Length: 69
Image (cartoon, rainbow, N blue to C red; front, side, top):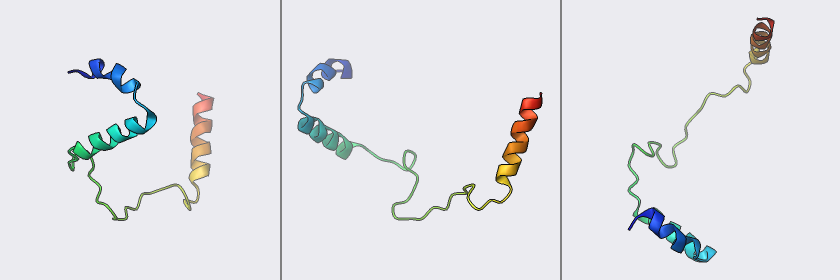
């Protein structure tokens, strides 16, 4: 049975049954490291523009250069 054949029946389900279907399907999903490479409960530090002094000035200079051409 294809997804196209299933969709009309799925759309007729109640909201609770749809959530239960999602829960069942997620439980059967094989999650590999290729799909989800991050480790649970590990802290990942990501660079952000916060506390980066001069970033706003550099951005304004780049925008002004773009507008002058």
